[in-house]
Length: 400
Image: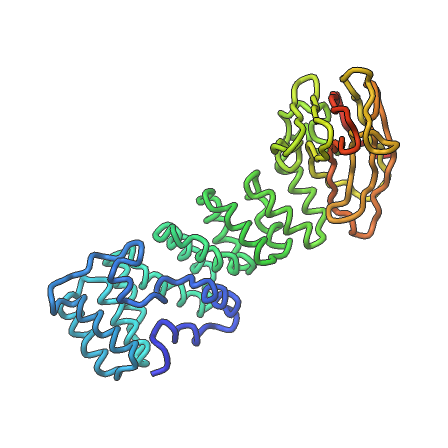
């Protein structure tokens, strides 16, 4: 007999469901693919305690599954499982085992009834619930499959990543929007996980647009990665507006006074620790200190500048004795720099001396090669014997 009843379910999948089924199979999403003996032994999150009294329905069911896995005759398997149900008619494991064996043997008229009965006896029964989800998938009832996986996420939390693989495939079907609107509104705990999974599996920006209302600070990095990879700058800017306060939405640079208290990462100054040098933020601006001999990026933020011409302005300068910065030839050892993400440098503005306002013009070209950019403060004292000590009161970008 080719395969067991669980394997045979895959072969009956509806053609429209192919991508969903493959995703679930590849991720080993269904706990029902684990043998009944392993579930019986307590491998499942909600497996019932094993009955140790010889001859009880559960032991008979386990023996029958062993016979079936070894290629035993369907008639022998069914006789044993029907005997098991007669002994333990209210044991969901036993009822689900009989349902699966009958379906594998081609007796499908009461499979759904038996699986539903197993779930009614114990709503936590993973095998019956999993079969029901697959039945929804192969019959193109995709919204019901979403609700089924949502329930499975609660029942088997340690299998979240495998369940997310199937939900990721389902989320890319437009007809599941209603179900996901309901589920995502009720399950903020794994919304970010779903967007991360969509990003890893190469989902398109249409999925982000469909569920844009659920993008918050936690979902932002993955949502941005998806839409920018897809070349969808308009959706990226729409997401930026959504996560930022209304007073910040029109600004090119968030927190230009460098107070460190405004914006949402990555649309604000990064505060990650650096290997050498330091930067601190306050109401008066940013204070920088870097010993000699160490190049570093001190802070940066993501930009979403549209094609056009701009002016970068920096107010600040050195605070150490003499007011001079030595280091990079012709541009000082402290710089403000803008680069296309994964591409060319657009402008570098040296901050080399006493505090004053400096500016430089630059252009963002059209053509989709520079959809997002990075504005960074860089320090390089590798060619200097003097440390860098400076303050920056403001950094801004204005369209020309």
